[in-house]
Length: 349
Image 1 (cartoon, rainbow, N blue to C red):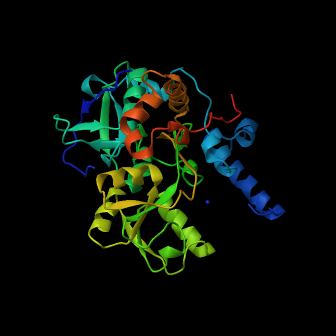
Image 2: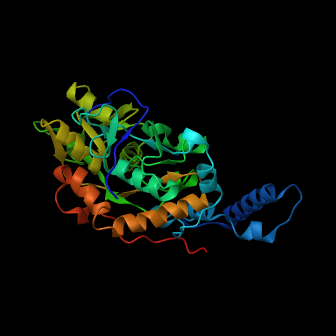
Image 3: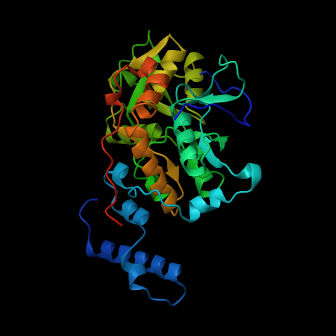
């Protein structure tokens, strides 16, 4: 597929740039909850053994979350109710509605030097076009919606978007709320700080330092958990959170914070935008990005997983080509470090 550009209806420039041993009582309570949920799905007073013993795969995944990146449905090219609803939109509304970022350099951003005002570009944008082309036969049949970090899940649940493709980490907390595709990118949390800073990485040098993260991000959750567990200095100040992770770079530039913690893939892009900052230390987590959709959108999840298989296998204009175009300059020429392992799926037909 030729990488496409689309003029979106968005305006403005946003910047160039976590079970111990279970007791019988707890198990009984969990079973009661499952039966109650099943009864509510089949109607008052109804008793459906299938509903009680075969929960939806997404519910099963949430209850047994250990490797969230493997808790997705097997690929399929078949249509279903969710895809049909997208295809049946009338006229100009017959588009895939996707939540994206317009502030992440190399992922989803607006390049003012592209000579085409309003053009969204980046790795995530390429993937969106690929999904639209497969489902609707037109790579440009997309309505982009800029979604802040902490609004990604609400936007899906409220039906404002069909999916979110926005450097969104698959984790156990999120698989309770939305369904994810198989992983399409591997990254990890890293520290970004001025080159002149005494901060050396995710270690004791963060003591008494002000750290910025995006609201609702995995970075903030990791910092909060690590400080409670003693893996992060107790004096590290993690109170500064912002709607979008790029806002942390602005706070850093203004001297309002001493360091930023975010995905290494995003931090590398920020370092490319500002030569006075750099990544400090190695990534201290391993995380995977996935396409997020509604929990009951099984057909769409399966279809996206089918598209991802093809996207990664396409050596001419697929995953690696998009990596070379948008990310190699900031993340290195070898894409192997960022390409996720072969996908694993829930064992459910």
